[in-house]
Image (cartoon, rainbow, N blue to C red):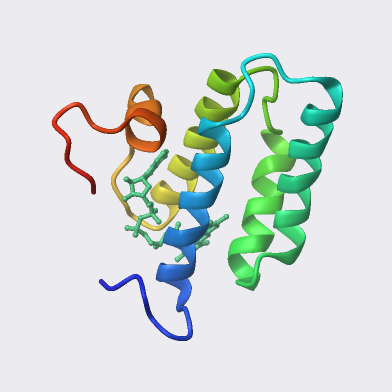
Length: 116
Ligand code: FAD
């Protein structure tokens, strides 16, 4: 699958969006202020209203109502987002990702130097 479809289709938009979201979580502060926690909460809430795939946005909004963002630290947010992404993976029949590998995938790089 190419990730430079023009205009973006659902798959390429999804890949690009998850890349942004996981990278945001990877660089979220270890000790966020209350303002930073409110901002990230608002961001995910609004994403569920404006994401330009109607079904995806609706299900995402519902998902985070039951499982709201855990914003207390970088590790907590990355782990929460991984769990949310895995819920979507499960729904559409994709492989479940090992959440202990989040920082390797999105912040530090794979130990073998590869990039998927
Ligand atoms: P993606 O799922 O896009 O993942 C990109 C990369 O993230 C993977 O290559 C892997 O390295 C890594 N990764 C995978 N899982 C995790 C994880 N749990 N934690 C951390 N990293 C991970 N598509 C639909 O068909 N129906 C939907 O309802 C739907 N809802 C969506 C909701 C949102 C908010 C978003 C952002 C996307 C949604 N999509 C939906 C798109 C779908 O999730 C995929 O992005 C798309 O199918 C492309 O999949 P992909 O195989 O390229 O990998």
